Length: 77
Image 1 (cartoon, rainbow, N blue to C red):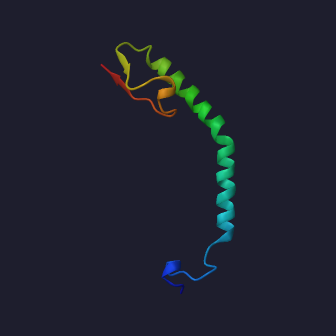
Image 2 (tube, rainbow, N blue to C red):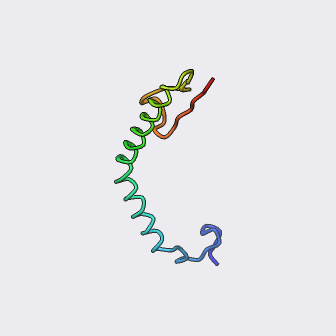
């Protein structure tokens, strides 16, 4: 067992393959994130536009860039 500075783990306990895999996953997510955010934002705006066609519908909160891309909060009377 390692000392307290190693939180009880001995040197070499880390999983290098998992660390490299995690790094690759984060890299791929960063590459694809912007396109996915744009797709979600367009979908959100389309849903909001459709909801506003229903009488007495209120979109709660800010619209446009002041709203989270994947968020819609709506009230119906």
